[in-house]
Image (cartoon, rainbow, N blue to C red; front, top):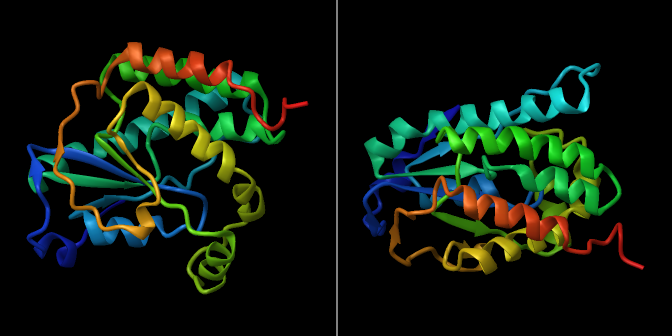
Length: 225
């Protein structure tokens, strides 16, 4: 679903240069939806569908990459219309399987199945890297309080998602090391005022491959001595 924030769009503090894609990222209940509403005129919300319980690893990987591609494609028109669109959670969500692997809640094989199908979508320009990623990092007690005060969502996997904080941040540090200037860390503590412009590597397979290769050889908590 795409939600247009009239209040946010009416503000004259959006120095967009051409159309841009913004992502609000962070653990569950970090405040992504609120941030997106404040700083972008159109918001693409996260998927709520799930694959069949009997699906094999490859089918699950394809399911998620297909859903993420659908989200990406839905933003194209509002991006052209408003000059900017914000995703509530990164549509290029290959970090999720990797983070689960890092904390012992998933496997490398499950992550790589999603990587393979995701790469195919990027090659067809049906999924890509956002131009700006705002990484929200409120402390755990704030996240827990925000969850408790939000009666609109169940957040059944909340405790697992809290465990993903460290690997999620590590993932985006890897991306920033490969393509500097895309990430804004501690975005919940600052106002987004820096000029934005379309990145030339939105569909760059070389960047994608480098990110996967670097992540695959980065020691994580589940593999640390």
